Length: 346
Ligand SMILES: [Zn+2]
Ligand SMILES: [Zn+2]
Image 1 (cartoon, protein in one colour):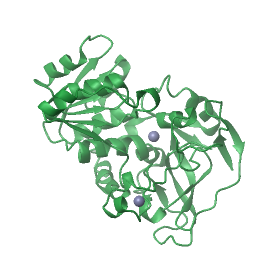
Image 2 (cartoon, helix red, strand yellow):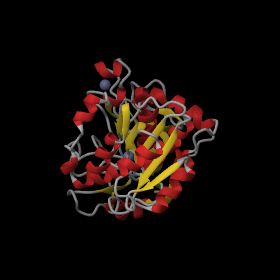
Image 3 (tube, helix red, strand yellow):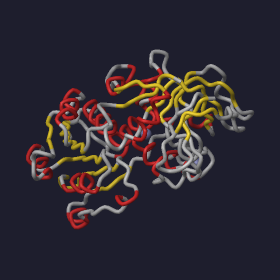
């Protein structure tokens, strides 16, 4: 099969012919129909993720059709249209048994713990626990855009942030994660303040439902600006970028008993940011993470997609081919573009 492969961290990946994958006993092989490009792929390529073993094929936001099943797989068969969360639970450990597959002790992550979906085919382990059937009217490219940023945002807003109607929600960073969070929080009835450095992304944030925007390049004190708009601070605030500054601002702009959810990855030099811990104590703030979403929680999100309360297809930006993927991957930290880029030609 054709796959995007890199042999050294930080060295240009190339499209190469590699052996077709075979399914494990509990796994499937999926024919990839669409796969999203994400900053996590860039982190993996740079060597920031200790799970990545060389040589490596990236790609973790995928949708496709089941091609082959392992002998212990009971719920899926050839031809099924599916997607998967980027963290797959083993289905056997304490966390999985308590319903928290997103923090499984033996998690399977395509494109990190195994070869990923920048390829014609991808092997996915623990299929019965992690595969999600696609509704008939959901196309592959939209489905691919769900697997990482959209579901992580859904869990961050709905399950971790517990956003309610009328809440003020601040979203720092308007890339794929931030725009997803804005759309989902707005659908939950919240008032969203979007913060970014570029006007183009803030305009797009308005289209996704933000009621106010802050251009951090033009305003000296983002925290004060959020406090002013929200009349005292956000109930819930999201760092959707993953940077010490946005992380700090997101915690500092909360009102008393507010909740910060960290979605943007903090790796390398950024992994130990400053936190205003005095405020966390005095105001009883909550600091939470969001690490993907369990496959069984997809149904709630799919229901909102089917009734058009959520429209993830609006977040799909550029469609590219597998041959264009190496260049796009290498540029991921420089220019993300508007919305989510998806590989749709293999
Ligand atoms: Zn597990
Ligand atoms: Zn991703």
